[in-house]
Amino acid sequence: DTGVSQDPRHKITKRGQNVTFRCDPISEHNRLYWYRQTLGQGPEFLTYFQNEAQLEKSRLLSDRFSAERPKGSFSTLEIQRTEQGDSAMYLCASSLGQAALTQYFGPGTRLLVL
Amino acid sequence: QQQVKQSPQSLIVQKGGISIINCAYENTAFDYFPWYQQFPGKGPALLIAIRPDVSEKKEGRFTISFNKSAKQFSLHIMDSQPGDSATYFCAAGGSYQLTFGKGTKLSVIP
Image 1 (cartoon, rainbow over the protein chains, first blue to last red):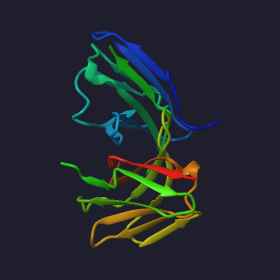
Image 2: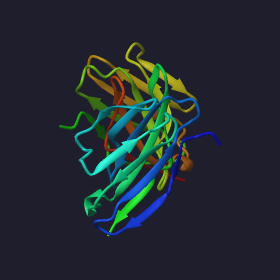
Image 3: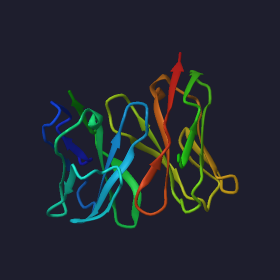
Image 4: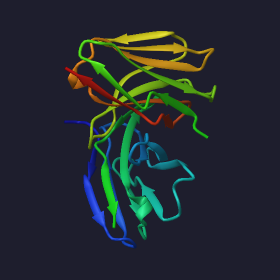
């Protein structure tokens, strides 16, 4: 399977702890996106990378959130000092070149902050 | 401000019927309109997408109708099947990010 993969699929943590999620995009896809989805809502854009450069960040991405894509391949999303309001599904998507908006999503990481 | 409004919130259709989900957008800079299907616990899967230079696009049982002047688009699922039961999201994009509607939960009953 050469789709977008995410790890872990589920994460339970206590408030105040740090968590890190990983996304592996489809091979050769140069654009990578992070979205957040809460229950009963559609995905909301957080940030995106073109190759290793982080080109845009949503105002939803507080300073407790940081994302990296060090070699232009996989990406990590870290949340520091987690809060209960961070509980959500974190989705990663990737796309290629001029078809930037044709985005393919991974299965997501479900985060629960207790 | 909700840039993409989707209706209905939920929909029940009998097997073999037509499911219709509607979306309206506000930002005229949007020029790409995809539909995604999402099953519980899974990520959204791209179903079909359209650009505003065409008024309709069909792929199998799925059809998008697009009305640029009204800033509306809709998804029609013909011959709906129980396996189509899922949540459907419309979205709109202009450069790099997609803006999603709140979703429609479709239930197809035998």
